[in-house]
Length: 207
Image (cartoon, rainbow, N blue to C red):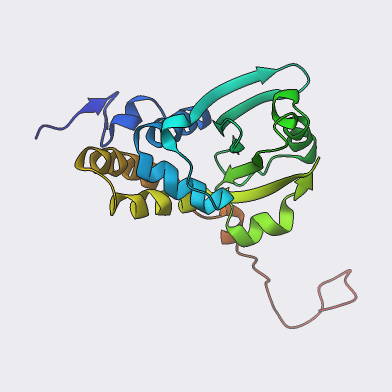
């Protein structure tokens, strides 16, 4: 099979053609959720503890609402569940102000009889996200962190249960995600060096 190059860079997944920016990754994951019922079911089990009727689920991208901001992904089964996903590339978690905007969106708040969640999708490890997420519940809605690594694990898990066409799609998504996500906090690699020596330098009170 010939290599496909874009601006001199090899393309290993169809999703690489979309790009590598934050929105590009978000759209790729949303497309895979919409095309693979197994992936969507695994995602819903992980995030809300339910497996919805995938035929009655709508996935929306970039939904704007006055005073409520723009959501990255909305996943809804009317009357059953409504999930808002705020996706970020890197270790930046959404602020409390941003999460409050989503929690108080009129289209979201009115669905109070459905299971509702707001997900913070980042590269943060679960331990880091739990410690640094500024809010865990707003306006009666639970805020849950989930990592891109966990999304990749869900896609890999779903591959064991899905059709051949879905397997091919999820393979493309996994190749894409694994090539993009560092899965680590760059700051954790900092090294601090202390130079030690005998004697007291001129003008210093300590050695």
